[in-house]
Length: 413
Image (cartoon, rainbow, N blue to C red; front, side, top):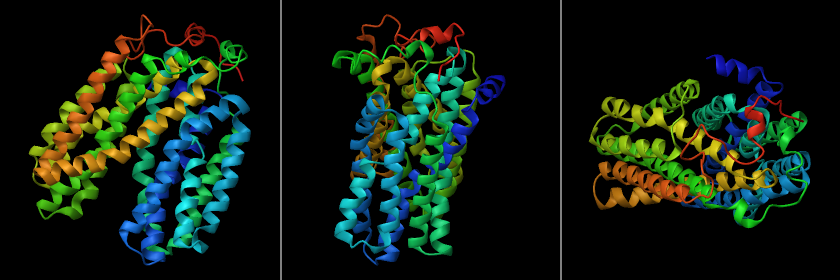
């Protein structure tokens, strides 16, 4: 655990991860908060709630690269404060908006969602040396898993104890507080050796979206497609067994295994290629369909859980090293969009497989989606002009400008 202590000892790192966790937990719970409000507050159907959730998710997917590009051009604080102001207005107005207006407002709120995840990843790349970066990204992946475990559960509990309107205000307050906290910290997004890299303007498209970046985005998309599908397959399996109330326990076991896997992987001395981690995640997901009751399903998802955070952390690490300094905000935004698109596609894809076969087919479809993304990412990354792509050689050099930090140079501000 020495690497983790060194990471958290970096100036501002512990505060950044703490404030970012608050924002990310609230952002993870925003769809649930809107769903509870539409169903319980407005008394409408789950289909209507799904429409609002889809509008918000579509906005987030489209807004990620746009906000990243704005950060590259205008700087961090101005973008964060603008998005915080928009979130305050939206969440305060949720209880008074008619449904039709809420649909459009949710899309706008997603489009200008506080980019806590993308900013945290950029800051990690700028604040860490090569020897600590993998451990730092492992902590970031664990942070994401904790967000998914805590955020929705708090919203559901809050809706049961108070009202959907109060819960919506609470989610909005947490998002705004987290965004304002990151703006106050104002973490560096470029290391000292990269300061001049962005002075020449925006890099050409071939550098911003080369084969390596496309490979990393493909694997980011495949990872969350798999994870979203696994959640639905768990529910379908336990519903068939008459044990659907145990689904929360199985999902919690999956999340705890992912946290453990992320911490273990970040402490290892030798990293694994991204495509290999994702391929292994796909392989261990498929046999989970053989479990037919909740105790066996808990045991079956541990393997996939142990590989989840490591896979997500290596994707984030690869994107940070492949992207040119002047376009890293856009690249991390694209990564967030790819992951959002994967979450959106995974459930309907696996749902079709379950409807056409049995619940076990859902695990097979999710695992095969991960395998397909791993194979595609491997082929694309080998076509990258870089002789040692981080996707194939995760311990090797990445994008220009990152190597000096590996030699021990201190990140700049």
